[in-house]
Amino acid sequence: DRRADERRGSRRGGGLGRSKPGVVRWLGDIRRYFPKPVVQILQRDAVERLDLRQMLLEPELLQSIEPDIHLVTLLVELNRFLPDETRATARQVIATVLADLEQRLTDQTRQAVRGALARSARTRRPRPGDIDWPRTIAVNLRHWLPEHRTIVPERLVGHGRHQRSLARDVIIAVDQSGSMADSVVYASLFACVLAQLPTLRTQFVAFDTAVTDLTAQLHDPVDVLFGVQLGGGTDIANALTYCQQLVERPRQSVLFLISDLYEGGNADRSQRRVAELVAAGVKVVVLLALSDEGTPAFDHDHAGALSALGATVLASTPSEFPAVLAEALS
Image (cartoon, rainbow, N blue to C red; front, side, top):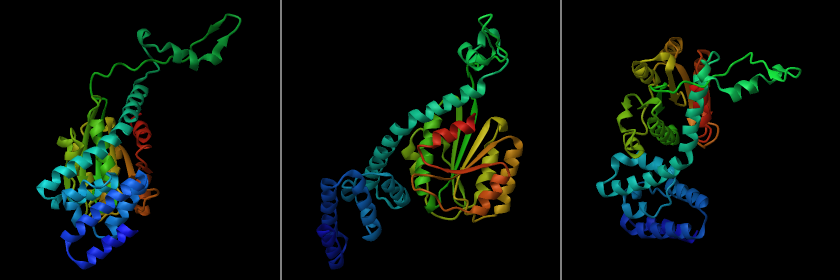
């Protein structure tokens, strides 16, 4: 409290130059005296209540802050205003947070994809060399003939043939309006992870009233996030029209639309696009949020309409997303 009071006092007394040292000391103090989750809450509160956004443009202050996803979203929002000397520091901060998230989420995402594709590739009419004997025995145990000490294999389960080509096309379209900031970060990270998998062709677009295709940047999640422009309007119909053009194999394609569905464009047109995609065989999954922030606010009427058209509509935390992905790919 004392440090915060000093910060407020110096802020009343003058400009940015005089207040900055007090803020840096305060940030250092809270990192010393409080655990990391508390530090992140205090930092977020300070940014919102003490008007530190302009000060985040200065590398000295940025280096004093405990990095977390909320800081990443703020830096992404401010990236157009970052001076060159701060941009390098901002990239390091973002890279640190994303590396931690990637370490936690990559393995389970890859396992979910491999498991889903393996299940979808299994056949019930396998060739002799493709029979999965342990699974075949397991599903036929009820056909055990004790007098003959034999299991009658009424159902054969086969191994999936080795995938030598792309098994699925995944298109991720994320709404970059300000309310979707955390979802943009997680969507970017997952897109980069999926782009590394040889059995998937992953395409990633961010949209407001225009569409930005960031697929070429998927080798580096920091580059992806610096290609995002948080804020602005929302034209979901325009984004879906663009995504339709990306679909080459409808029945092998999954489209993730990540949006709270507050449409600034034409909602009827959005629904027509979804109906066309579903009719063509594309699996459409609408994620109302991809974040840890709890139940999201969203347009219930629009969500209900898309669900009635055959889209899967839900919200997901990052830790739940691999299971959602696996279900969509199966």
